[in-house]
Amino acid sequence: MTAQPIASPAIHVQGLRKSYGKHEVLRSVDFDVVPGSIFALLGSNGAGKTTTVRILATLLKADAGAASVNGFDVATQPANVRESISLTGQFAAVDEILSGRENLALVARLRHVEDPDAIADDLLRRFSLNEAGARRVSTYSGGMRRRLDIAMSLIGSAPVIYLDEPTAGLDPEARIEVWDAVKELTRYGTTVLLTTQYLDEAEQLADRIAILHQGRIIVNGTLAELKQLFPPAKVEYVEKQPSLEEIFLAVIGGGDKCDADGTTTGGRG
Image 1 (cartoon, helix red, strand yellow):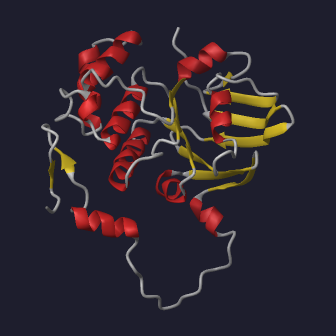
Image 2 (cartoon, rainbow, N blue to C red; image 1 turned 180 degrees about the vertical axis):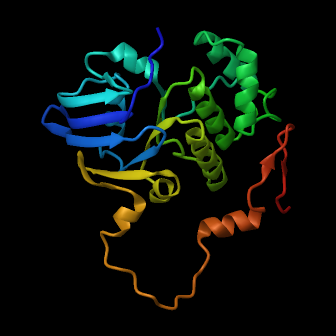
Image 3 (tube, rainbow, N blue to C red; image 1 turned 135 degrees about the vertical axis):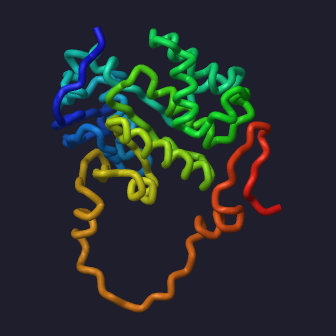
């Protein structure tokens, strides 16, 4: 029987604790995630982000506290939780020998989804991979692999998706490609729990941001609410200089697209 989504919150975490020996990784973590939103768990390496995701994915047991996903208790209803989620880790889990379409169709068959080929074609279209669908994944760029990985996460219509450091190690163009793919998820009502150490990523994507530091949530709110923690901005004349990312994208042509044969268009030679 497939897990059925229920009313909010999509993810509820209260008093979550986890230690390894004397080292406390999580120290009473609390947060809620509204259905259909992108919630960013922001923190530096070692803050406890991945540990939190592993607990919410039933891959790790908490020492104390409570958590539920899609209305199911993580500790007592792990099978229902696993039916409700999809997890994309820090490295793309794709088969490089297969084509993009074959990767998608294979996962659809493993999840017993009707008409796997139609599902694969739809996801290739949604994630702008149509032209590359027949090519081996070994020829894909980092951003394309990540987009394919996220597309694979959607097969089976999991209401909640965990994205753990989805743009780690990607170049600026690839990061923007992945950001567009993540934004696409909420158009279909998917709830996204995003962990990241990149401040601009949380700012670009999240409806709500929680900062995890040394195992504790030290602030939790919308970007507008977080900005209110600082004194009101003063109006001053400032000569704005372009950021390095803006320079990079301008120089290469503002986002080249990869053709079916692996070449790029739109850039400057």
